[in-house]
Length: 351
Ligand code: PLP
Image 1: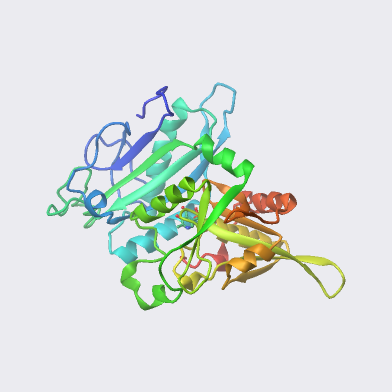
Image 2 (image 1 turned 180 degrees about the horizontal axis):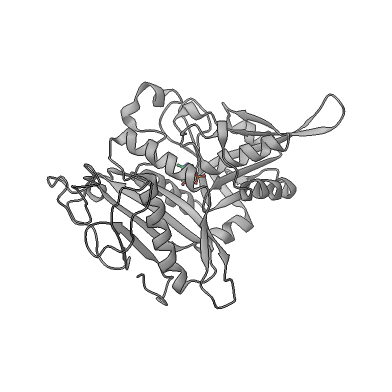
């Protein structure tokens, strides 16, 4: 089981492997055995292509405690939007041609990790990260943590789930609002469709550029980034989707709300948060739109947000140093939409 009481937060890792299996199989899973482990212990081979080439895929989900808060009893957790994340993981893995254990195994692994996590962290939100790599180079099916053979087909990758507490910094940034820099991503908005080998719009492990952009923003006194294409379109944040809203007068004299996000064909990652928010906004009668958007659209908007599963809905206060309009009422409505946890339906194109 995972550790408890360590400085800097506790966590647990669930690997899919042969050693020390803990969870039994049930209908719909492949019978892969799971091992719950201490994430501070080494577990990956230095030949793993996820490490050496960023050749893998991942998902980051949030789990919220459902009982036990403050009562001394162990919390249990509900993973938010688990179906959407698993569907997107499968889409990413397919793009990279990495074989995946079935969704039921990932659910079991997440549940096992959360159970271990709950023992040391009774009532904090948890980050649940799912990772699949191409596995160790030159050792198909033969690596540490790798399960091949009967019952699981040819799973030659490396697979794990990591559960850790949500960082307080993220919550604070959300409450303060974000100063955002527009940064050139160096690609045009048609490139994703012309060049599928670039894996744009998949959640691959190759996030070094995204992290570098965030460090650059911090060096300029900003909190976050919105990437733009070389032909001037808005794309996405390094770890988030961009949303903007406008209040629009209706023919009957009332005021409606239009919620818009950048065009998906521009190679951005389809966001599970955006998908579920759009589904709820649609049910509430809002008008919805998918770009193309340009920086001037953000300046003219009534509110701009960066949204993601861990960050939730964070308002943007400044764009390239200039203050932009904020609407706390809309921020609250969007957070409420996200909390509804609706199936994204037509707004989840990875389905
Ligand atoms: N875009 C990128 C590049 C991301 O990395 C993420 C999430 O980390 C998102 C968008 C938002 O996706 P989600 O709402 O599914 O967390």
